[in-house]
Length: 193
Length: 273
Image (cartoon, rainbow over all chains, first blue to last red; front, side, top):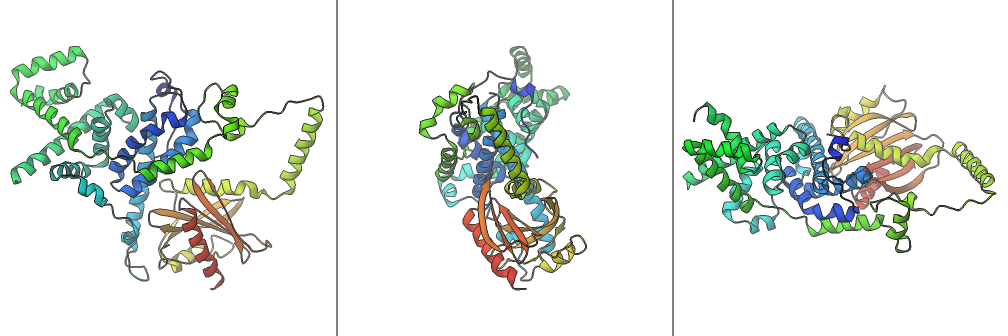
């Protein structure tokens, strides 16, 4: 998906915020990384995505007209992340198709970084937390990002709708579906124990 | 749960999320009094929301990422003597401003029109006399970025150099050297045709872990072989060299040292058939 500059309507939604890139955008690196990390499910790629998003944000900062800087920046992060996910899907197909044809027979997937957590994260988390994390990680990307943006980053329905480019009603039903799946998964965990 | 409740669920959720105007919230509350199921749902949603905010990992940007961003910004920041004060004189606000806008504007004297005329003539002469290599890095890098967009990357998809090389036959009036460097960690993943510098060129796509490298090749007839020159545009690194009558441009978001490694492989491999 290609990033497009905010439209006139979008620019006018809030009181303009003035400041340098460093004042406005850098404070949101954590939020950017959190979103990228949850979308990409891999620390290294998430870093690449944030880095790329910073470069794009720098390029487009001239056209930034003072809307919520965090929402503006996270939208760029999201678009970069979706671009990388699309590229990854393409490569996923290729590596399967060509696995048998390579001279030494090694699938390209061998070259791709392990999407598992880094050991630190694994260590830091207690068991119960891991379960909810896993359930969230298993959601389809569009449901996952809705929950992350709304619950973790505390964006309103309207802001999430704007950032993800869908109507508010879609945000509501995505949140509903996402929560149903997660609540059910936690119930199942409960009954198994 | 009756039909009203099915419609009510999204409203209960919106109420929990604090998204309802007061009047609608009051209607939801009124419904909850007579509907234990919806009341239970509301309690469930509230406790789940609390759990989620408490338990789900909120990742923080690693320190090296912050450092990389700081370094990037520092590299673009104005030097102290032409700091924010001077930038503010010319600009309505102190957001990031392209470097060329910050250049001091010369005061023009009476002789200025002549000087400007000469300067213009000199520039035009340069444009017509010099080959257009100045804009090539931009063209190559923007082509690489365009190619990364969905569906644009490859015309022929193969990790087999013996499939990629014949694909170019009949599509180009030259035969680009096609080598696979899988063993060295740079597998060939495909190729495509592209237009650069007003000619048809071969683009070979290599992969290094998650990173893609576009290698553009075309005959640059008569140019002497020269070693790699390097640079970067918009965060992408490139290396350019000439060898055996061909111009080579390698572009990627790979770190410069890894791109250099790739180029070294190519330069060793290209001369041997």
